[in-house]
Length: 143
Picture 1 (cartoon, rainbow, N blue to C red):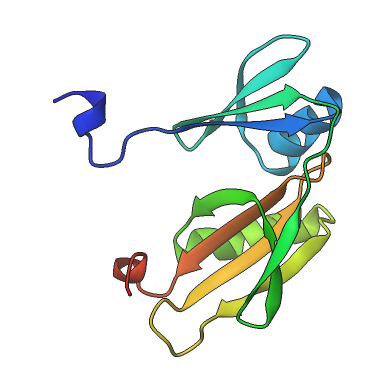
Picture 2 (picture 1 turned 120 degrees about the horizontal axis):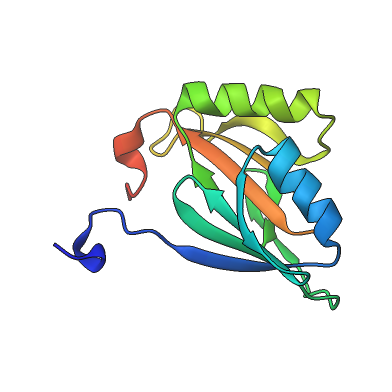
């Protein structure tokens, strides 16, 4: 079996930041990610076994918002799907750290297929992150 045959292959995602020290504090201290290799223009992070990289890029990209379940969801965004218990603990960690939420933790699509806890917040460079947890994990790709 190769990495490409793995049921859950690792992904690589690189995102722009305008301040590596602020990124180091946010991703390392606030979110609790393990830092890997780095230089004066980028930092590798272990995002639950996936390679997430913050790269210095001073120019901002345009963000739009799409309506989802009565909220304006920032696009683009990235994040992880957690268990409900992990989500609750992570939300409490972010709240204790004074994180300002774009969308406060809440249950989206309540009582419907795909019911999920979700929250959105920004990193110091303005990149949007979404962390969520499905009430029934088998409904992640439900139609």
